[in-house]
Length: 349
Image 1: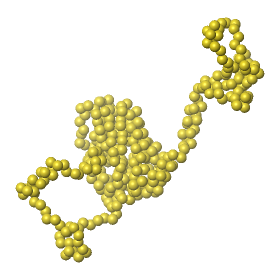
Image 2 (image 1 turned 90 degrees about the vertical axis):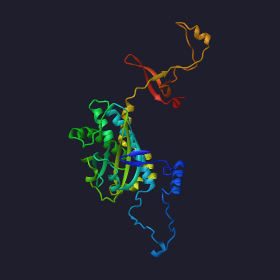
Image 3 (image 1 turned 180 degrees about the vertical axis):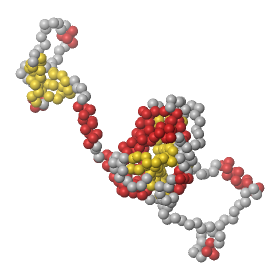
Image 4 (image 1 turned 60 degrees about the vertical axis):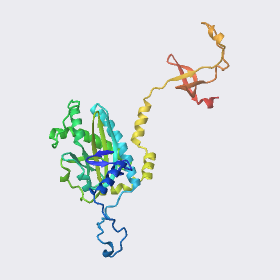
């Protein structure tokens, strides 16, 4: 069971099933008259209203059905799980303490449902992305904001009081360092889909005062859980459907995983090549090889000759980190022993 921003996420399939004690209490209340048993209504009724009696009919909004497929939702969740790991690592290094960030839920709802479940006041940030039209929301709960601020100011957040007020200008400036690191990690997570640069355009404390889309517009909400020492809080990323609609085709699970597997960043390849080129390696030359008995080895002394079956004119094997790689000729260069590479060992054999 997770509580995220005032909403309850249940991962138990039998969360609404009554236990035996509750069932017995209800049956007893019905028998004693404390609870009046409602008569069974008509289960089937025709188009004629008279056939249905007093059946309650509710209007259904056909715009409410899910607009994001299950495959796309799974791809979004996987994408933001990668963001959560990177953001947690960035926060841990910035705050000099272990910060755990994980995805608590990924679902779609209307914008009004999202804002109605948020606390007030809170840190409500409007986010834009170059290449996408519209705005997104990044909400961070005060339950984790104030412990982070206390940590930045040198406290240990043991007996920290969470005030019920909007953030001050100084507190907003401090938490902005955290938000920027989060948006940087978010850009890295979205790099496999599209190169996006996220930035905060405005900050508000009351979510009800911000209407980035109509109240009944479908949005995708990714809820995160942040843990730092003995403190925990939530963070919610709200993405309106019309903002990510241009990239929805790339969010299907098959195409997203395929692009993530096959796409290679030239910048990453260049960086890896540059780092590997500076790695030191041990190079050795094997003049000859032979076998002797342990008795001969124990009695070796200065001046003894070790005879091998390798001709003196045969190329020497050059090993790199113990692996045979080249064949070379022994010589001298500027007064030092030297090896000239002539061929691969199999070519010299």
